[in-house]
Image (cartoon, rainbow, N blue to C red; front, side, top):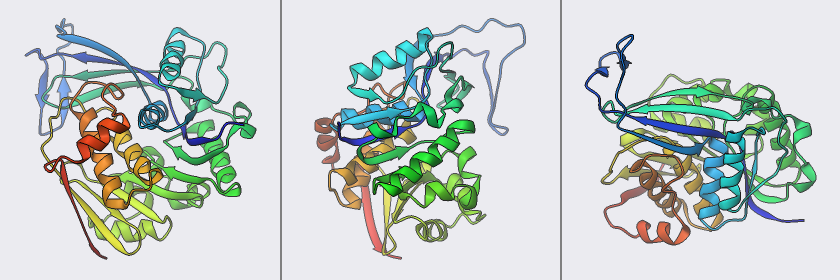
Length: 328
């Protein structure tokens, strides 16, 4: 039976990026809204297609960083599903599931060009329909599970995978989106109880902990009561990590921001990659930032994910970012 370094659990999509700098797109900055004139024809400057989804984004990230990687998720048999599976095969990621006949994979249209902002039109497809019977637990031999957000039936299956991980002493990393984090600790108990690494942004940290405070120290301490290592990202302000003893603060370096889709996935997978490689927290955060800033500078969630050689080289750049630590 094959031993994986990490098995990623989460969604798969096909992403189509619609890039337009048309003057007919009006940005209402105060309301954070983008308006399109009714009945108008908007010229598109460029189109770009890639695959996305928290599950496959991180699976490819781990594989490029040199790890034996598997992916658990729900996939169909349509053309888009075949596109996802073909890419995973090319990236040396093993699909640990079975395709649902007649099912359609997720699909997103991402409208960019209004400054550096975007609008995502997301079709979930069958991503929320992963059943326990779709997972062959006998094949789940791994050092780590990485769990992205799952909803519906897929969330129940994610709970079963977390329970399996705890029973088998397999470590688990969890990266919940806001709509999962807002379930709170009680409803996420089965996953949190198996979790060794929690990576999320500040809004997700507030949602899962039930705290309204913007004080990062308060959030770190509250979350670390449940999980050994917590990492909170905070946009341009950087990121923070806490292991119950020391707080690590990452201040961002120069960034070329082109399009943000997949940046969170690339950062979170980078943190875990560093831990698997035996790096300390500071070095793991530098690897995570290197992976994230590479994706941020290009269109698409997977196009510029780094190989291990590329990541180790970029990490050495003095102006990449700065990580400091102190007792908390």
